[in-house]
Amino acid sequence: MRKLVLVAVFGLLSLIAPPGQAQQQPSTPGANAGRYGIGVVDISFVFKNYPQFTSQIETLKKEMETADGQLKADHDRIASLEERRNTLKPGSEEFKQLDEQLAQQKAQFSIKQGTIRRDFLEREAKIYYQTYTAVSDAVKHYAQQANIGMVLRFNGDQIDPNQREDVMRAIMQPIVYQNSVDITPDVLLVLGVDVRNTRPAAAGVPATATRPAATKFQ
Image (tube, rainbow, N blue to C red; front, side, top):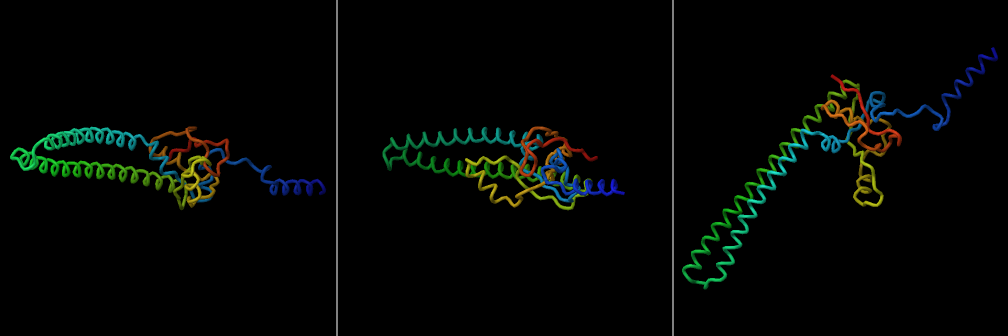
């Protein structure tokens, strides 16, 4: 009987052992998400590591650079005409003709510049919307499979105490602590992207745990 009592006592002590002696934290960022029924996801990290998004944005940037080059050429041509007009006698017939030509070209340039920039902004917005829709669907799919009832957005980037922007971002972030409920790698895996061991540990995750592999749900 005494032996049984001692075993029971030691078992109880093991359950109430200090945190430092307790069971090790899960080694994967989202290991506790299903257990708690809640998860967090770093949308910015997903966007930056989603090739379908980054390739489209890179292509758009190159097209914008080409368009900016064309606009610059038009602007330089107008500036050249202005310099030429300034050498003419105000009120002369040639001055009047060149002045009218400049007014027309400036108006056309303004319309062209506005049209191009509006087009690029609309295309950029469409890319962001399509990507966010895909990411949202991936989050929903994973959450349903893992029995997660709520997913909150957070930023898992490391904070540089010497950078005011980083510090203010950390202060304003609604998620102060998360205990291995970061499903960011899992969401990327659903999207077909493997980010194992490519990012430092996020806030609330043991230092030894990087954003590693997660189970890809079908």
